[in-house]
Length: 150
Image (cartoon, rainbow, N blue to C red; front, side):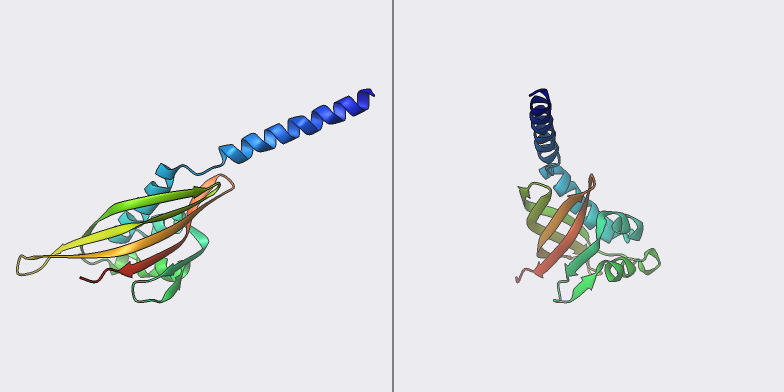
């Protein structure tokens, strides 16, 4: 009788602990937005070290021209030795949906660049990002960029 009570109590304790761990592991929407901002900032700065850290090892990106790029290809593209002057970018209209340890972020990346004649050229891309938390660390698993027609 005592063993049955102990076993039942142990099962209840493990179930309660598991439930609290699962709920505690949900991604925070602000954390997801911050990762997307870090990626955009790292791309503009050609900061391959940050990209290496925040992109998941299985990262895939659908580029604005429709190519599917691996993490290695993306990080190599942003080699600091290849840095050139470029646009500034801001994120807008971000929408975050959380599914426990996974977040899907959609929004716009608005680029602005001053041309040699002094005029400003602006263009927008729609982006979607999938972020997953594994072993306590969140990283970007995939991104998809689509240019917005003027």
